[in-house]
Image (tube, rainbow over all chains, first blue to last red):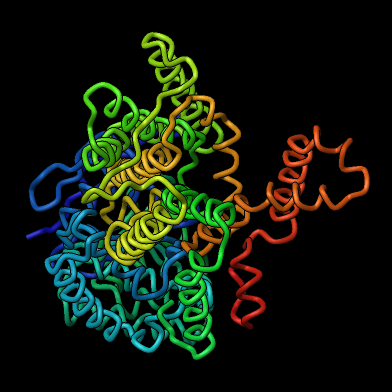
Amino acid sequence: MSELVVDKISLSFGGLQVLNEVSLSVAEGELLALIGPNGAGKTTVFNCISGLYRPTGAVRFRGQDIIGKKPHDVAALGIARTFQHGEVFARLNVADNLMAARHLAIGSNPLSEMLGLPGARRQERAHRAQIARILDLCDLTGLADTPVTDLPYGTQKLVGFARALALGPSLLLLDEPSAGLTREEREDLAYYILKTKAELGIAMIWIEHDMQMVADLADRIHVLDYGRSLADGPPGAVLNDPEVIKAYLGTV
Amino acid sequence: MSDLSPMRVVTALIAIAALIALPFLASGATLDIANQILLATIGAIALMLLTGFAGQISLGHAGLLAAGAFTAGILAQEIAAPFWIGIPAAALTGALLGVIFGLPSLRLRGIYLAVSTLALHFLVVYVGGEYETRRGFSTGILIDPPVVFGFEFWDPVAWYPVLLFVAVIVWLLARNLLRSRTGRAWAAIHDTEPVAAALGINVARTKLWAFVISSAITAMAGALFAYYRGFVSIEAFSLFVTIQYVAMIIIGGMGSLLGAVLGAAFVTVLPHAIEAASALLPSSGGLAGSIFAMNYAAFGLIMIAFLVFEPGGLVGILRRIGGKRGTR
């Protein structure tokens, strides 16, 4: 069954139509690549899902329409995302970036935290243990106490990925995780994505420009062009689709 | 943050020894300044939480101090409430005002938020002034010194350990908070609100908590100030007081509790230092009348100098001396 169904969403900014009846879906444990030329509306689809924009149509997560929900309420349902430029919290170290994403799961209140009550301390310890697993999954354990601003760009983006995982999502939205990464970092990223899929079995939608990575990793590809859904299917079929080649890939 | 290098341990031990020895060595006047620093420290930590950590600008700090002082003063005057009612009542008043001061932050930011908190400052000051005139206390409200087990707290020597204790407790509460869920959420919304929201942080609630906690501590500091002085007057809470507190957190170093303490000490001592310096000048007679003007001018110059040359504040300078990484 599909975790998320995006059902004919449309969105305009003034006279500019950025999404035109886009429909897609992703199932549990599935890695769906979302590709298309710049300005096709890929990130806009993410912003519609995560509650930053309010399109017409429907976005159903496990059957429930989530359009109009506030971003933190969408996150509370178990939908996490990364951002194109990492957007890690510069004032926090690596471990605390992940802990910030445990916000919903940690049940302490400011008063018990101020007083350092046993309940608050116990929660803190329990959730530190939780994020230790994710740090380990992404090979970030050694950098846990490092301020994120001390890290190279590629590592910061990896922290953004780990931070999204720390939320404990059942749907993960990855916004160009490989952009700006070196070849080596891309190989690592591919490994972490596959590992996440294997170990956590969550649904992922992945915006990507690296067609080699997409062809290697994706279970299915959805192509956007000028805010419309152009194609959807397994990598072999979609990447050889003449329409897709004309709109996006050019002559390969 | 928690690294215990020998250098840090030694510095901390010297500081603790000095704090304990002070009342035995210092004169009454010096101890009064120390007490003022401690009161300012509590208020500066409160503002640091709000602005330096949660990233919310407020120009309502003097108004909140006034609200706390007046809560204590009015309760003492009207129902002869002792300090152990006056201080919690002031904190509660502060918390409630914090919600009101914080509401504009849900819509406004930066300079617009600053102006809206400024409006609330004038509202509090107006209400305080009205109370003074209506009840015939046009020069201010007198408060009896607090009495604990028959012991009256009226001189700086008696107050010093009390204020030191409260300042240390407020520091510890703030540190605990910053190291847990709420403190991380403040850092997150300070960096970028949409990203924080997408990761499940309720931005509005997080901001309101910052205003509530900061305002409660500030109002408590205002009440302590009222008991310490034994007197409350709205004159004491001008806009210049707000500017002084903003200066404390800038000069001390944004986003650092130690910065709040250092800034509080610096800004409290500055006018006394200027006074002492001007007394040394040969033509001190002519300058005596312009000490206030000099104080304001020196204040402005130092603030600009810090903003331009040392945005990390005193803490930034310390870190550089200590050979630590820069503040950014």
